[in-house]
Amino acid sequence: MKIGKPLMIGTTTLGVAIGLYEGYRFAGGLVVLMAALMSLIGAAVATLVATIRRERRAEEEAARQRRESSAEESPK
Image (cartoon, rainbow, N blue to C red; front, top):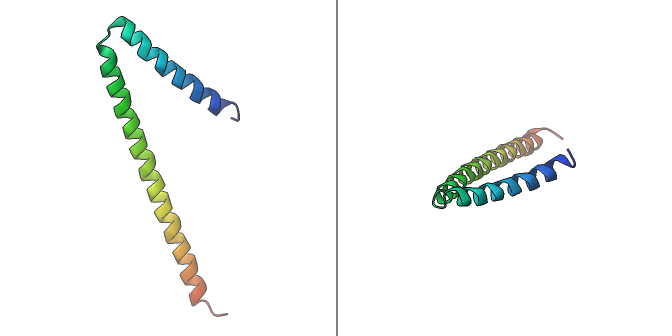
């Protein structure tokens, strides 16, 4: 996977750019709709990633607080 992820990121970006260009050549006005759709999908993915990161951070914080409170309650 060391070469796979960078290759996939590069080819996907290139594929989207070529797709937009071909969409413009095929039907100029429809490229606006394609770009709007891709922007909407990108916003949905960004929202999903932000939610997952926020929930993971909250879970880690709760686990850290539980560890700290159990360490304080245990006799030394």
